[in-house]
Image 1: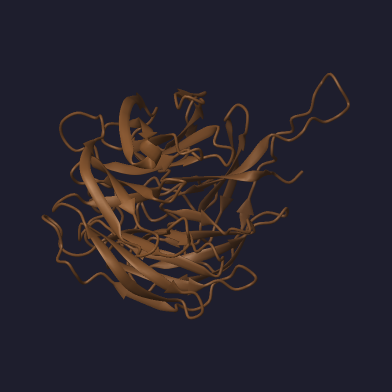
Image 2: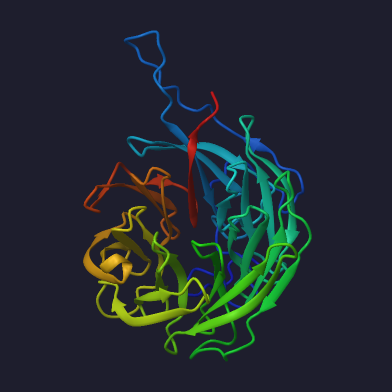
Length: 406
């Protein structure tokens, strides 16, 4: 598609522009090539000048998602490291051959990374992780347009993806190597009808409930969250329930409480959050009353909620307000109490993620082309550490646990 196409409030290109921006790029990419080349800089050596004994490595791997077909975008999947203690990010090059990797997720084994390819002919790419560096295993079509989210079923045998522009969700089998097989199912959200101002369904997320019994798909265009059962032998989805949000809510992202009985929904269009009760037996989600994002009047395009591993605090990324809202979680997950908002240190925080330890929070700021890092205190307070890391049109940040290869 031609460069310079107009984009909507989400930064997602309007009709027939199929990417959402780009990333870290020092090397020119040849788009959609099946092989990948890694250009890397040496990882920092944390050697002590006071002792010949090398201290434990604190640097961890960080992957950064992007758009490769947008002006000022990147050339592939961004590679970086972060210091587990200080939060400092160091660039480590680019993995080319991964077009428009706007969202990333990790296989439960930790050995394979998956990226959406947010294009007209949507795809998902599998990337093997090893001490030798990341290597592209191949890509598969998603049977739809503009995939923007994906997750791995807890069994590790199925990759689930959401096609935003075509309003459908897809399933791929995961092979023992981590590579993907051909599509096993595609389901389009044909009912209920689109909400106010929407021309059709827009599947924005697909995730498995904590108990593993149901797969839930959030559709912004239909103001609906669909509950499915996944046949784990055949890779087929069967709808069992759906939850309707108020017309014009524009649900975008659902996050479960660790106990699995409640979930929290960020509504992009009407600038609210909703606490939802979840019934593991039936898969039914029951939305509560809309609540404030703490960002004042107007629409702040809330993007995503995170919940701490203890289930005591939740954080919301507000793209228009350029802030993070902090909530206290009360009554065993049934209630959110707004505490405060803090500046995110960038423009348009598209995606937020905890480090595996939960001590750091990363915010990918699309319009300022940066990644902010916060230290998370036990009382949930956030403290911005250092200067934001420059990452052209950063739209996703995925920090991993293991130390980098020596």
